[in-house]
Length: 232
Image (tube, rainbow, N blue to C red; front, side, top):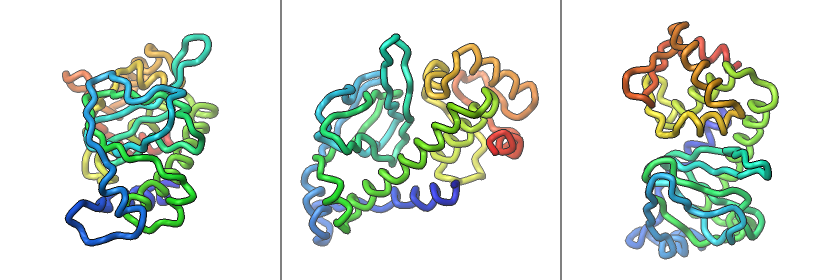
């Protein structure tokens, strides 16, 4: 699974066509003129559930959460997106989740193009969007397993490893991460309470698996092997 995700992730490093670049195949050439840079403040809504899905978004900086408010008032966070990733891809005409800025973010918004057109295109942006659709499918499957079958300790370990790999682009040399999301966000992503997330992080610190420095959202992964055993 991790090998497949790593291979797909490499697609995000491909450059996007610009105005001065050499002519590209059909969709990439069009995309070069339709991207608009936008900035959003922390907790600002980028789009709401049910809004027309007229744009795709590439995240340039910051972190975005996609979430759904359930009928009983609870919130389920479907995914977090970090710099370099694309979000907002929909098969239907409307967004199924809301997208919100976890931290101040900058995105490039591209006009929507039908997925079947993207699949037959050969431009860099087209390849990134198709790769994103496949990657999101795999992550959704992993998230379903996490929510349905893993213990609280396993969920938190999986989350920490996943965020470390994505933020540091699979460079295992890094052992510290700064999480911009609050523990309430982590809880709503993992299907836990805030208290359970806090207790689990504290237990991992006591077991010398992680360290929680004074900076509230900094986490040092002291024993990645132990985290990986929990994630197995």
